[in-house]
Amino acid sequence: MKNKITLIGAGQIGGTLAHLIALKELGDIILFDVASGIAKGKALDIAQSAPVNGFNVKLSGTDKYEDTKDSDVIIITAGVPRKPGMTRDDLLSINLKIIKEVAEGVKKTSPNAFVICITNPLDVIVMALQKYSNLPTNKVVGMAGILDSSRFIYFLSQELKIPVQKIKSLVLGGHGDSMVAMLDHTFIDGKKIHQCVDEGMISKNKLDEIVNRTKKGGAEIVKYLEKGSAFYAPAASGVEMAESYLKDLKKHLPCAAHINGQYGVKDIYAGVPVVIGKNGVEKIIELKLNKEEENNFKKSIKAVQELFDAAKKIDPTL
Image 1 (cartoon, rainbow, N blue to C red):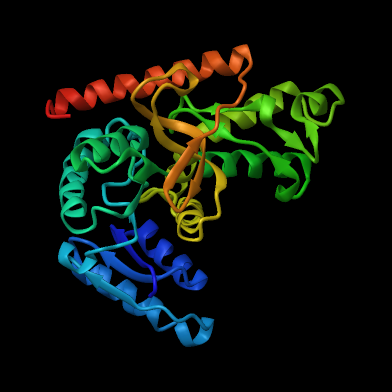
Image 2 (image 1 turned 90 degrees about the horizontal axis):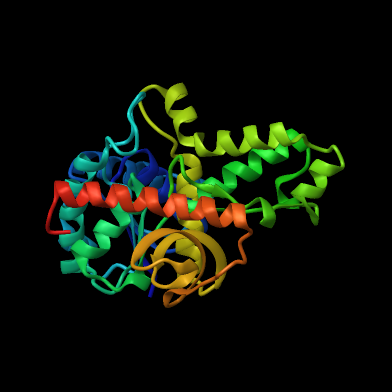
């Protein structure tokens, strides 16, 4: 039996997800969108590349939740992307309404699925999704940290002229301007980044600039594209999570997960390193944070909490 993977939202990220999942043959793919023509068109287009790329999976498009029944994995990208000048927070009221409908559809048709949310503002939308759907917290997770970490590593590799494979790092906290680049856990070819600064490989100013560019990584792309937001890197990040779940790879990945006691935080979704295996989020990894990282992480959690309070004002049922 092939895995069944549903992608809710057939926009740029949804279409790219479908293509990557087909190339990796992770399972049969259903593209779901209220605009069923877009879902059907993209599914057919990707399916027609099967003989060229040599993959063997079924792709179909639909606007009916019934067709997504008993999905193993659901990746949600439904919602409005950011437009230039729009903050992630401006998106909140529009995307809350959309996620409420999605949560009801998912709960009814695929209550046992592993659900990955990519819709912004990420941490608050994934928290709302879990509350609306009432699915177990270990099966509902948000994609953000992998993308933020990937951006950070890429910028470092460009600056240091070192292959990305030789850099290890991660970005935690909320997926927004308060995200925390974990400099104490950043290694360049096995060397701590602070040592690289001491040795003059990179200046402290340049490192700060890169951290700042990472925080604004999404906005930089929005500005260039003018009529859309990032989709290739977000889709690749979502696929990594789905693959770790479906193949029980138990990868350590930074994800927006439900924190309940770890890092001194209670009942909130934010970016932390987790283990993803066949049971979903199997463990939250507690890293030892230095004083600065801890303060920044607390600030980030506070920003997520404030945004969730704003969401509760919009919808008091949360």
